[in-house]
Image: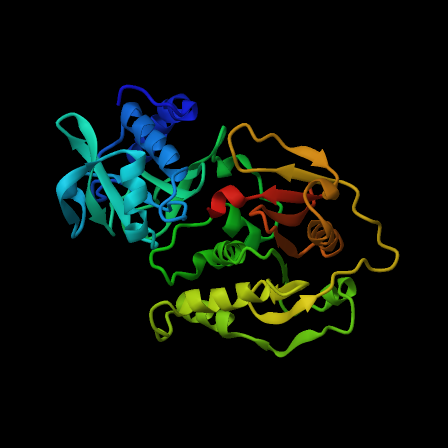
Length: 377
């Protein structure tokens, strides 16, 4: 608590303190009280400890942990340590193997004026500061979106000396297909099987397999997309596979429950197909049409030379770049598809973790490339 050795922690702690204060103040009247608000000194100490812990190794593995700023009394069914542990890099790294599974948080609170790790918890209130360590030097600051939601909202991404504070509202997607709007600025779901953010979950699952991939989302009951695909299609799906579409439709109309986790399993199954060389093709109703398809430029169509690039972060000004500046063949072909099929959306994941969404902007007369990996961590 006497000062961090990671400069970015001190630089950004006051801005994060302001964010959590604004988020708590904007909560709906009558909602259950959220977590105690973190002050800048606590935020700085937590980020500093998380950063140095991320550089440790425990039996050869890099730590993957989640820290929650929360007193034990506010946690649901906390697992309490007999003696609190110091908030230090080595102590956090040693605990990492026990708490690396999703949904487990190390609880951190003050005891006799010092921040300590008091135990673990699986349930935390809204507005609770969470710092997730994802890899060496890579951390995400986040919080629950609301009390009845399992979803988290990313606030800032720390990656070494580079820090990105998210600002999804800074990106205008008003002239893009509705399916893209649900990804850039999704409504928070009320349960793990809520269908409102299916495209976001597909993107997260695509990124998770770390092989890279492309997902093409085309308007349902149209055939114009065939102009931009090389034929014959080796892995055509006939008839269209509708498991994911059926689950989404049943959830919307209140049909019979297929069982917990069914939607997530269906999402992972479709996202897994994007690991096959080529692109996976679905409709905007989530019907699977094909995978492993090759994208081609229709005869007479111009080659994409420029795209508008934006990122949903503070200070992320739009720029016009060549598609080759965004990645290799996968990104260039995805940009070409979005140019030629202007009602479609193309999602491209790189093996290095970058994630770009391409959609035609009628207002600008160019393909718009949205870099969104900061939303998916």
